[in-house]
Image 1 (cartoon, rainbow, N blue to C red):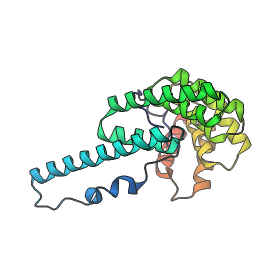
Image 2: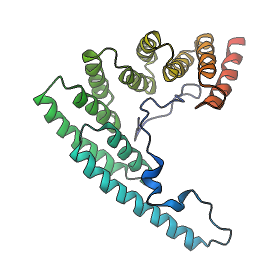
Image 3: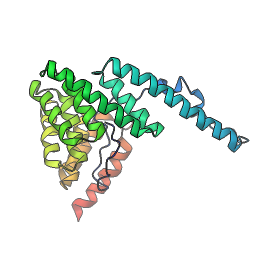
Image 4: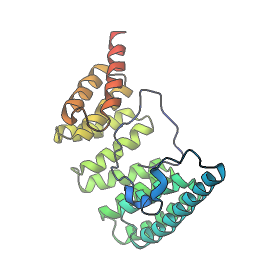
Length: 240
């Protein structure tokens, strides 16, 4: 998920796998600024670099305008919503982002009054509340989605992430363990479970889970290098 104002937790308490696995696609920005990933020529002047930065900001603002329109037209589309939040962060337009998503909350709240049991509306509300930093409301709406469908594992992992980043580790464990018990081959859940246990200083449990994760995804899997580093650190903690 994307947070505009979120304090960092202590060093060992961090999430490696992003729970809301809705990442801005490479083509979204690269189609507008294909040069962005290319190294600048050695002879490039500071003026040329400044122009490039200006072009990047222009491209980001164009994407913001485009995505704001699309999200307004499709207020329940959490993929578009997450892409927009990501671009707000890239561009530094966080105040604009907070204002926009507060407006979306108003829109979605109206839809929710019309159909209080619509899970898509509730989920979109939960994510919007999380984006603007209203943790209590985000938690409330994630829980409402889970009440409708207890086996919505993605939403349980989203809620795990919210609890984790607010240092509510027991609540985070409750959600992620439900997923692990039901879906023992879900690598995302195994990874999350490891970091939740480490945050609770249950290093033996964390080691067992992260070793399982590394075995599941393989040497080239997402986050494996970091997982190995943390595995070594947690083993040191056990020996103390």
